[in-house]
Length: 157
Length: 376
Ligand code: SF4
Ligand code: SF4
Image 1 (cartoon, rainbow over the protein chains, first blue to last red):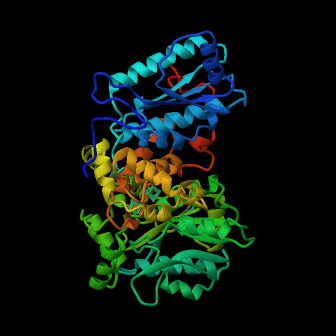
Image 2 (image 1 turned 30 degrees about the horizontal axis):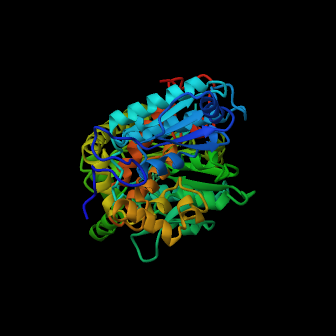
Image 3 (image 1 turned 180 degrees about the vertical axis):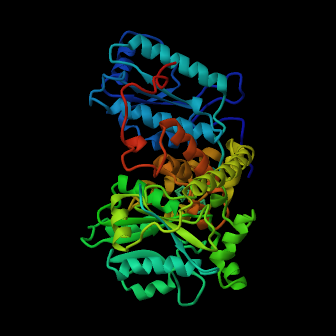
């Protein structure tokens, strides 16, 4: 069977065709900041697209790059990591480590000609509900423009 | 001024000369043992061995252009549990020495009581080519040296053709061939106090003027020509290996044997994540994947394996190319790891094996850096 490159069905990305493409996105959000900001966005009824599957982690520094790679290889159209602004980590330095790890991961992807712009890192503190909603809108819009992750639906990966 | 001595040998006696130098180290009890490649009794092929009897060093062949395994890994096995109180000299090619420096920083080897004897390296061949060379000539090391010096690099492994570190860094004692008329002699230089005391103990004193300047120039020239080769390799990599389609096509030959990981001196984990229970799935999980894409290739996750291995060790990749030698299916893992490694190393201003003091990029951070990560 040929790898399917276009035409998206199934768990990730529900729509076929680029025009109305709805990206499937994974978010790893720190418990102490971005996850709380997400709750705040919800309780203040701020709208943001439903494309993000949020995963709460105890620290952005707990996001092993392999989680991001696994999501991308499984066909996620984008992965966003949300952590506390540098200097504000609940565990003091977790987000500084996130920063190096994710910078390294993006360099690996880029060097191999894989799209590193599908991986975003954003610092969103607990009180920034509005920034959370805005960032999710921007992320969704950017990934919608990009179209489906080319690794999606490759059975031979 | 470090002690630097030109040891003279007769034409065709380079190997014998280097061996007698090594033998004198054990005979005069400057060191208690040497980890050095010995020619195997069957002839030709060499294997690293820990040698305590100086008489065995007649079989030594540290210049043989073959590297079946990285001695860095062996030095790690030797010292990981507990370093000895006795002094062991480890004879290393430049890439092995750089890998060992990385392993020490990764706490997989101990520097204690090891004396590094670094040897200039013009490059090595694959096992197959080496065996063929052994059949053609009784002196494969000299033969390859001659060919490479005259510009014929066809027998060298890709990793060696593109290696810009033909001379050892961080050795206690360096054995120099580059820029030296190896028909007449070779250079021995102390690069540390430890090395100095060994050479002193051997009673080596600068005799004939040592061609240090010529050596530096020759090393730089060789490095430059290797860099040129490397850039050519990278251009091919760019065209043939990058992008989803190319990557999936080069990895189509990958059978997930993980030999590349086993051969890599930097992949030290006792249990690889990819052999762990994390990757034991129930049948339903596989069926779920199959349903999602119509089919799922098995064994699964070969791209994920390589991306993760890059992520784990490429900041320390020394470009030895042993991954490539180990691959049964010629998957171009060497150019991938070398190129990605170099990009990562550039980004962190890190050179693997350069110094025991340089911090491993992924074990530290700076508060003021990478401001672009996290900003839109
Ligand atoms: S990845 Fe390959 S070239 Fe790099 S250190 Fe490991 S075996 Fe050597
Ligand atoms: S790249 Fe080669 S050596 Fe490495 S796992 Fe695949 S087939 Fe095995």
